[in-house]
Image 1 (tube, rainbow, N blue to C red):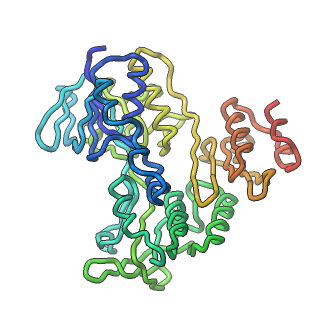
Image 2 (image 1 turned 180 degrees about the horizontal axis):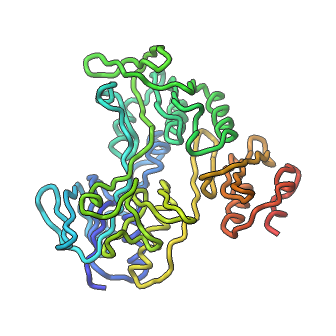
Image 3 (image 1 turned 90 degrees about the vertical axis):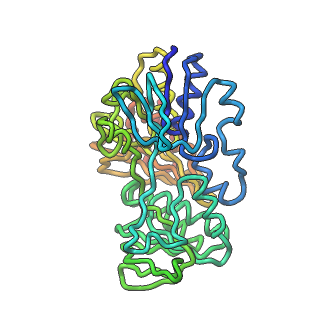
Amino acid sequence: MTGRLVIVGAGQAGFALAAKLRALKDDRPITMLGAEDVIPYQRPPLSKKYLLGEMDFERLTFRPQTWFAENNVELKLSAYVEEIDRNAKRVRMQDGATLDYDTMAFATGATPRTLPPAIGGDLDGVYTVRDKRDADRLADEMRPGRRLLIIGGGYIGLEAAAVARHLGLEVTLIEMADRILQRVASRETADIMRAIHHGHGVVIREKTGLRRLIGEDGKVRSAELSDGSVIDVDFVIVGIGVTPNDRLAQDSGIEVANGIVVDHFARTSDPAILAMGDCAMLPWKGMHIRLESVQNAVDQAEAAAAILAGGTLPYVPKPWFWSDQYDVKLQIAGFNLGYDDTLLRPGSREGSVSVWYFREGHLIAVDAVNDAKAYVTGKKLLESGQTPDKSILANPAADLKQLLS
């Protein structure tokens, strides 16, 4: 285990790969290249507890600075990779420096989509939320009474709305699709989450897109919407999805398709190069998917570490996700791609409810809103490949434990 591993990316997946290798007593030299100027940290709390001032940055870091030296992990910050030479097994940085590798791993994550300059996307006061710098800039804007426009009704937009309302801002959220969460959740789940946000004073306008942002002295001041209306705004958060950071892989001739294509062992089309996390397009149940979640980034990276350390087990994704909004915890087990039926089940406590997804009669996912019992039960059913008896599931008085017998 003497060959150098170079990890491009110092986020959740990159750190998990390095940490797991050391936990497995793999002592190969590791160099981790991070584009940011801070040590690796958790991203999900950035747009929640960190932005709310409830968690300082030191609590976000995976390990203290000393961990890297103690574990022989060379960490290079503000390190931008310009090119991969696969024939020479060499990484070239933007400053011209080079670094040789025996094995390389892409853990480059994804980048938020932005608005084009032609419609005002380059105005001051227009933000995306992905890293610490984004959150720090946004914190200066989050003051009571200010007017925030959120573009996009996915989980990023809804979570931003919850934080902003908690801080006393006026919030309008627009979604150009027929409803919020259209790409990622059922109509039932969307109805539940919409009602929660309405109850907290968020104005949600569905079937409404953005024509343009209007600025004054380079700063956003208002927004013209697709229905012709114009609303005054103090700043804007754009939450319209992400694109995988696969340019380096593509430029070096590695197979990409909306992400870096990998096999069950996280290997790319170049056997000396792996990819994991949000940037990777991985096999799952006869198809290739990207799983944009912390859980997948960690699990896939740790599985890849086991392979590098001599293991032979493939990575089998067991998707789960979560979203915190106000005092609501939405927990998701499974992946609802291609569902053709849903079942809404009230929970045992007030305000708890779950949505169960089926495809061709088989359970494929569960959304649980403040309903830990439904989430845990659904997760166990999915992991064991069982489909619950719908008659039991549809009876709110029935004990979910019956489904596991």
